[in-house]
Amino acid sequence: HKWAIEDNLVAEAEKEHILHNRDFYDLMSAHGRVVICENDLELREAVSFLSRRTQLYLQGKEQPGLALIVVRGIDVDMPPVLGDINPILQSSEMAFMRNVLGKFAEGC
Image 1 (tube, one colour):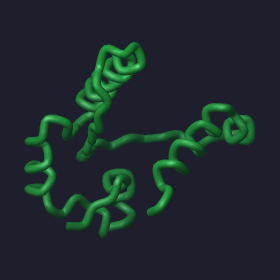
Image 2 (image 1 turned 90 degrees about the horizontal axis):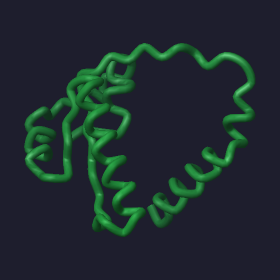
Image 3 (image 1 turned 180 degrees about the vertical axis):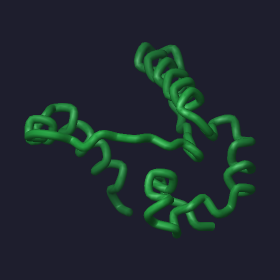
């Protein structure tokens, strides 16, 4: 099975990233913690739901868990980033993401 997190983002430019095995993802979606989004509305709903669960977890009202969102079939036109992006790169949010992703990748 060929797949990567960025499959749908680079599928047109990188043919090896196309979601070749649709049945694999359909089977995964049968799991209660896996959501397949086919359009931007479904993606917004999934992220909103997970955001609510995260808030409940932070309040001690929800158990921890892992959720997976598979995105396929969404065309997104993103404007180019204009100007100086150093303030973004040096922001506390980016530092947090680097820390989290670094911890996640430890030992890989």
